[in-house]
Image 1 (spheres, rainbow, N blue to C red):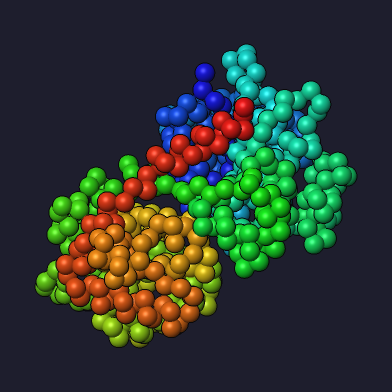
Image 2: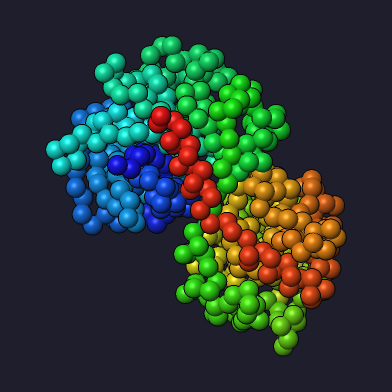
Length: 491
């Protein structure tokens, strides 16, 4: 009989996605299945999720879930079980999973996601009955602050008769902690003892992420380097002391990428598919991308200079403010830039202004388009990821797979996945990209200069591209690591 895990999150591909969290949650069931683990994924019943459930089988009903009626619907995520929390008062809304149509946080996000955590704890505790049999789980796995109340409810909110189910709390980004004022505590349905410095209290209010970190049996992050970084004040976002106190309970498991989706040899979205043995075919994708963005092009395969791409949230965390300062230098080096993203209005406006200053050399698309991101990875020469912190990052892995050389800050998962093209690494034939240190104008412009110089050395550039494509960032190793963690908790 397989080990049964309930994975709870606020998003998962292909149902709903705002960032890399969705990719990880969607890929996890298939990643651990070869290791004898069956993952059931619990998602909120947003309109976009319910629209993708053609058959809605009700497997549990709550007359009052934090004050609202709710029911649990069963479906499938690929070959794995899926359950959806259908609570119209909480989730039947326009906008994104977290923001209203005007781009503001929903005022009751705390209640929406506390209800998700309460439901997850109930399900893990045996509330769901499938075909007349109570469904039991060996481990509960919660992702980020939106699911972090699930371990807290398992710890404080269950009846004495409920089974003891161990839990895992995964931090995908420590910066988002679900902080709320203390006035909501009475409505969470937790005992008074939970509101303490050793519980969910945080600076006079409540941190939902802290609730999960305090009560989960194991804590993971999405890269080994980030697991070390969050033990420091610089990256711990005020919770570094708690992470240090949890000690050996904290580990890092690097995210993987779905090679059935991100594979230039099979990708149906490309102008021309290619492999490391046929890199010349990548040029057709570059020409197509130049045309799509209205960028200057030339006749030869390397005409027009290196084409840099950005696929990112346009925020300070992602270092986009520093890149904005460096774009004139990039153009001065002979480079071009195609950018896809959305975020802080002043950064968006800055890139629009840069495109106006450099027509044909810089082009900007505000928003997010999954299909276009595939075409950009295939057509770009290098992808820029100058993040101030990056728990794991997936875009640099997509770049490696598509021979779009990553230029990254030396932090978190970026440091774990990209080998800098320094002289020693080039001589040893192991370089896969370009790293830089501090996220500053001088550090980034130096990395851009190094990248353009490397691009000019055709043989070195091709070797870096081929080594990048040879990297294995599939879910094989990560799936095994998660399965081993689950089994260690379930013993």
